[in-house]
Image (cartoon, rainbow, N blue to C red; front, side, top):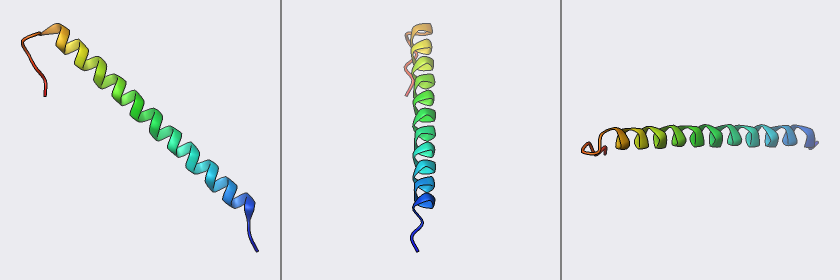
Length: 49
């Protein structure tokens, strides 16, 4: 017999995990961008890779 509730719960868990991963990636990207701007403003001659 099919189990729709289990499938819905799995889909919700996958969506939640995807949102968590996306939010973490955005936070990391913003932190790296802020650090890059900070170091570029602090020392203009230093060029990070």
